[in-house]
Image (tube, rainbow over all chains, first blue to last red):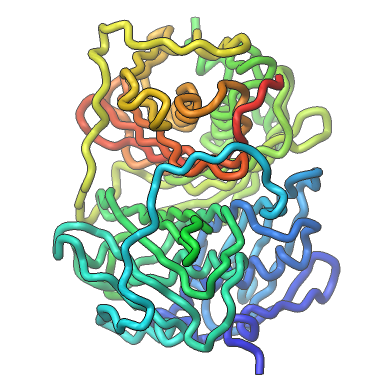
Length: 259
Length: 259
C-alpha cells in the first residue's frame, strides 16, 4: 500500500509537459484542499520534468481555491543550466487556472561554499509527548495526515508563534519533496492573536536548503505583520540532526469563517 | 528632466502585452545590472498591464545575468479578480530569457481587517548624518543612484546584519513601485561575515505592505543561513512614519569576485 502522500500526489504525464492528477479531499481544511498539499501535487509534475533532483526555491500564487477532483498541470521549462534549472507549472481545474508555480531546481548534495549560521533550531516537545492540540471552528481533515506535537505558547494571546514537531501519521519517510507541504501544515500562527478561521494563502515561497535526514521535523512559524487583513507567516523547518532543511514565507489574508 | 529611476525603467508597449525598454548601465554592480533594478524594469511593464494599482507580492527568478541594452518584456495576465490580479512577465535579451516574474497586484488603500504588529522599525543613523560607507572590490556604479546612511555593525564580523536609511540621490519621491529596487539596493549583509564580492541573486520575493509616506526609508537586511554557498537575505523596509512598507527575502549564492 503506498503512503498517503505518494498516492495523493501521483501525477501522470499524458503528453510531453502535460500532466494529470487528482486532488484528494483527505488534505482538506474545511471544504478546501490545503495549499501546501496542492503545491506538492504541482511539484510532483516539476520533479518528473526537470533534470535536477532537488527543489531549491519554489513560489506558488494561489489564483482560485482548489477543489477535490481532477487537476491538469502544464510544465514549461524556462532554463536548463549547469547548476540550476527553472520552470513554471500551471495547475488547472474545470478550465480555470488555480495555481501558478515558479520553481528553480538544483542538486542540494553538490552545493559548495562557505557556511555561517546565526540561528538555533526551535524548542519543541519531546517526540513521544502528546503536545498541545488546537481546535478549529470547522472540520480540518488534513490534521489526520500528520502526527503533530505543538509547544505551549510563549505568551498566550500575544505572540503569533507556533512551534512543534511534525511527521506523517502513516510513517512515510520525510524527503525534500514533502517540505512545501510541511511549510503549510501547521495551524496558522496568527490564531494565537486572532479569531480562528480559514486563512487563504495568496502566495507561498519555500527555500529548500537541505535534504532532511530524519522523518520527524522541528518547525517554527511566526507572523509579525498582520496589517489591514494581510499577514505574512515565516517558517523554519529543521531536521532532528539540527540542520535547517527549509525556510518558508507566505502572504495570506486574515482568518475568516468561510468555508 | 525626468528622475533617473523613471528614465531608466521606462517601457513602451509595442504590441498588446509586449514591451520594450532599455537596461541602463548606471545601476551596475561591477559589469552586471543590479537585480532589483532589473526587477523594477519588469514591474514597469506589469504596472502598465494590470488593472490594480499596487504590487502586493512579486517573485523574480534570475535565469541569466542581464546586460546593459535593449530588453523585451512579455506580460501574461493569469487572473483578474475583484481584489487581486496575477500575471507573469518574461524578460528577454538577445533571444534569451533573463528574468521571469510572477506577480500579484491589488489596491493597498483598500485593505481592511485586523492589525497586529510584533516588530519595531530598525535603528538607523540620523538622515543628515553621513553614516558608514562600505568599499567593494570592484566598481559599484549603482551606489551613486542613492543616498545611503549605514548604521555601525552591532557585532563587527559576527552578525550578517545591515541597517540604514536610503533615498534616491536625485530626490525622486519614493513610491510603492520603487520598493523592489530598494529591496536589493543595500550592500549585502553577508559582507559582514564573508569576503566581499558579487552576490548573484537566484530568486527575490517582495511583499508590498503599504505605500510609503516618506522619501527616506529605514531598512534592515539580515542573513541568518549561509550554507554550502547559498544564502538567504531577509529585508524589512519601513517609512519614516514607522510603517512597514515591504518585506523581502532573496536566495543568492555566496560572494565571489567575478565579475
